[in-house]
Length: 163
Image 1 (tube, one colour):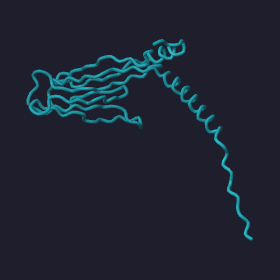
Image 2 (cartoon, helix red, strand yellow):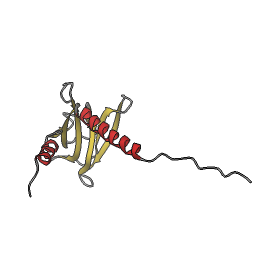
Image 3 (cartoon, one colour):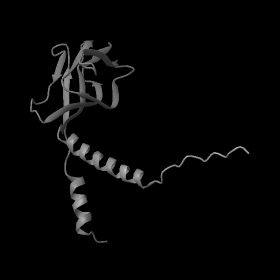
Image 4 (tube, one colour):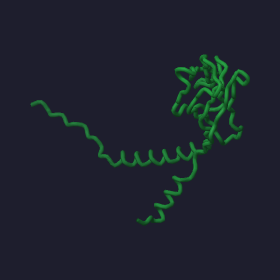
């Protein structure tokens, strides 16, 4: 199988890294009851925290350990939401899937003494990606406009005269 030059340039563009991801972990306990994820203050980067698992650490007591997230909602206000209630006997670990939050995010051990380990990914997205996507969307819209222009115009129905 051989690629033409055009096909290989398309493959190169799609394999360029657009998103960087790094492992993230923190441990919450009675000694360190909260952790704030900030990200860098660079203007052209957005930082996200993608939470994957929350689990009790070695030496956890038989008690409820409640972990909450404090983040900014769509209105720009801080809100706190409990995301896990762990107990050594019945629920020592929770899988959150891909629970993604934009920085800044604070993780807090609201109840219990832990230790509770929180893990996931630190995602870094260049903001200029949006402008590239906007250009592509603009091209798609132009193609749609061309397709619409090619359709024949709808003619009004002719009325029959009463005799």
